[in-house]
Image (tube, rainbow, N blue to C red; front, side, top):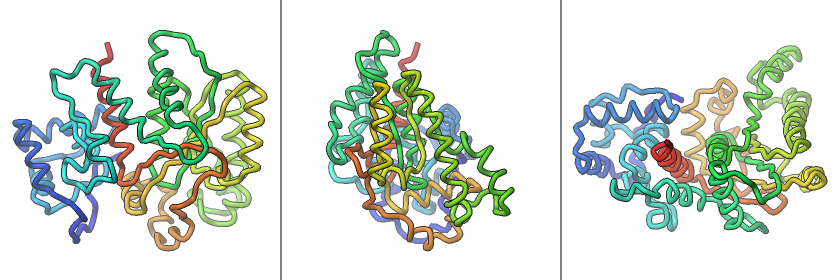
Length: 343
């Protein structure tokens, strides 16, 4: 992912306070040059493509001439150990500013990795009929057991779904890093088969919106994905599975078949829906620059007709509120804290 600016920012962002970004830099005793160097290092450590991050760019952020794109905002939060609201990028979501502030002082470093993980997991809320607190504790225990051994729970299949650009893959990777459970990601897993198949059918390899894809390719794509999941289930292995799952999570019969198959093998199923807002989805889709997203960006209004922000799974599920990137920012904080405490 490249750290880029939001193109064509000609309007004032609601609640944007660029002066707060400067205040944080000065409070940390950093010059623009020093802040840029640290941003580049943090971006590299976080797996983001290293940006120019020169003093001119940072100055434009601090004076309000240019609004930082999503990856820039993520790395700023890591640099200053702060949230987007506290850095002035946007207003806080209800309860976010007090409940999810992550600013550990150096003398509080001991144990901060545990606190950061706990705070990130609080973004997982009950979406209807499931014990969110109990599941948060389960993930925490799985993370801790990676160092102590032993697992009192049954294996679990975690389905992480959401619309394009919602942050589902980032959150799935976060869960994988905590628990050690393997990540089953639809796109890299099926793309080597999907693209040649689309080409053979006379369609574009990056087509994800026509009837050819929806009727002839998508069913096979998801069938292949679930075969990998069922292979893990048969071995009693927990998995974190990420894909949009728009049709699947909302199909009660499909979900019940999955739950029944897993239950027969002594495996639990935890559907997770990643909630996001339209503006953030557009930013993240633009920033990642994937060829499969070209049609969405070119025909954004048409694509939005297929997006239902109120859509939820048809069975008991968990919800991760990633509106305005809030959940992913906390996951970044937790990953950084974990890395700091690693031997």
